[in-house]
Length: 199
Image (cartoon, rainbow, N blue to C red; front, side):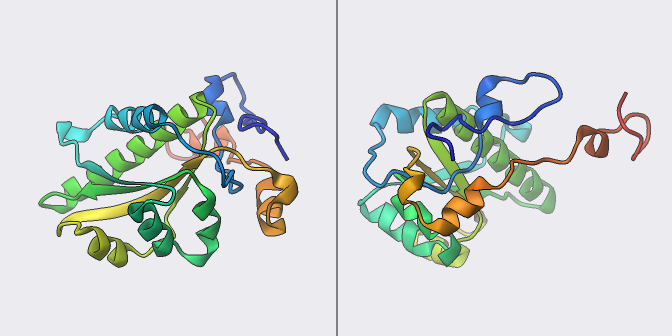
């Protein structure tokens, strides 16, 4: 297992930006690490400046820092399989204002994904790790934080510092030791017609 956050670089057919290649989703967080306020703000700024369809800017964040009430509430909303995130330095609930129709709801979710992506890459650039999670109680989050109707909780992002795998739960070590894989480009990038590999 890696001793540093960028110890598991993606295998790419051509070089890509180092922070993109280094981004992965570890589950071993250092339970003693504290995130600096300026680091947390930088992650939110990176998310805020993600592309936004029609300039709607529908993405909102509920931010908890370890041991504060918001963090404790968010940690309690996570599904059992995501309990490792209780060791993170911060938990960020990402929400999207779905707007008035199906089209705006669709692109609000796209915007939320873009915001999460930029947040995670900014974290890598600062030596931090992140793990976005869909496994949480959506209805519970809406009730706990007074999230208005029409605003959908999308994901919780755990943020922190890479922990020590020598003392991590064996199940986490096993999952995080699996090979990093993605479908090859010739199966996902097409030219001319669907299914015809690009180039």
